[in-house]
Length: 83
Image (cartoon, rainbow, N blue to C red; front, side, top):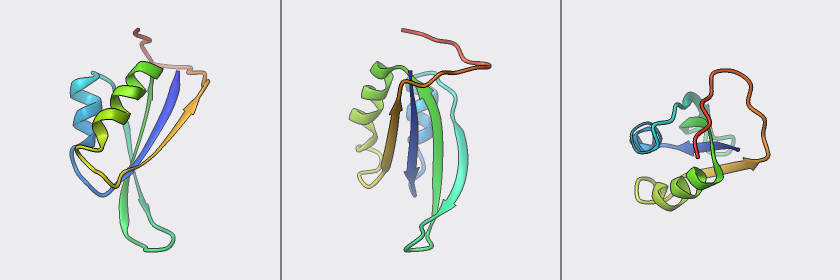
């Protein structure tokens, strides 16, 4: 399992996660330390295969999205593991 954090100014990335992968995500708001511009922060948990799908398709929505993928995480709570 991996956690994926996506930082973006563009709407629509949530549709990639919610509709194409049938996954949930959490939204947050942030601001750039250098630019002070508002950004959306999306957080989700996925398999490595789903992470690859997100990496391949996210740039078609936001070429400037900043993505952090953290491998080897444990999940406790309401999460359905699918392969």
